[in-house]
Length: 331
Image (cartoon, rainbow, N blue to C red; front, top):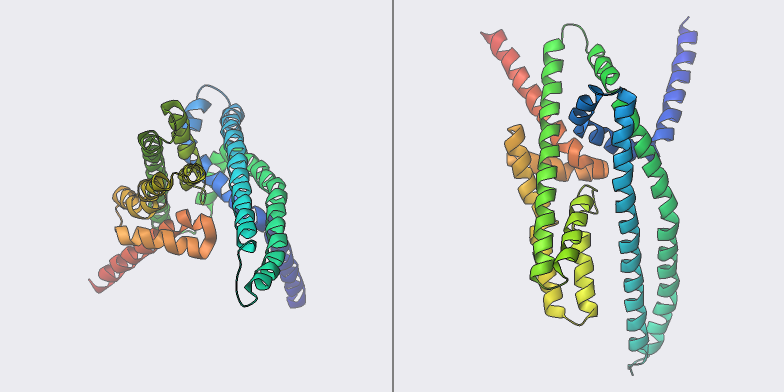
């Protein structure tokens, strides 16, 4: 009997390992699909009152696909322009430096260096081109997971509560409530801050005379959309504006829009204002939220922006519960 249990235990571990290897490359897409589904769950519940859960999920998924298509197209164009501009600037610098009269055989050294650098740059450009299909596959998984989370939201909730061990319902419900409060605070802070970033970016591009108001307004809307994509954020918009001004030879305004964007759009507000908003909503210490965000990103990658603060909030709840139990025992 013992040998049979060991064999079946080994089979279970192998299956779990293979399952993990299967979903690991898609974990980020599934994770953020779950977060977005949670964010729009109140809208889904209202729609369900007028239609079926599947129809509601289909409507919301269609809206998300439309927004994602716009963001993806803009991202591809912006990144392509950035890479092409960077490559052209590097090649211009290479040509200029090779025309200089340098002493001590420096010309030959530079020529060898550039002969190695050029293939590397070309290889990087090719890797960007080949990464687009992978990104699109991640998007497909994201949409499918988003739809599945919405359709099965009630069942998922029942299964989570069914996993709570007997006799620990109070503690489990307390932890789930703390996680819910923190996640709601993160979502609200993200939404409010992103809208503010879009307004600030619009005013900045128009105020610095980078473009006319309608185009600045469009850039502001793109800033809001991009700010929902971790890593990309709103810095891509002001970076494009700065590169455009540099190509026009307007160095002063390029530096000005860069400082303005970095301080008021991204990344500085992400590590100053956002922790304050989350801490206020979730009734947490600001330093704890900041440590959770930075440490979470360090440990879990992009997902850590959300995981970090939630984990620290749960730790805080566990410590309070442990103190309460110890106090009751001592009393």
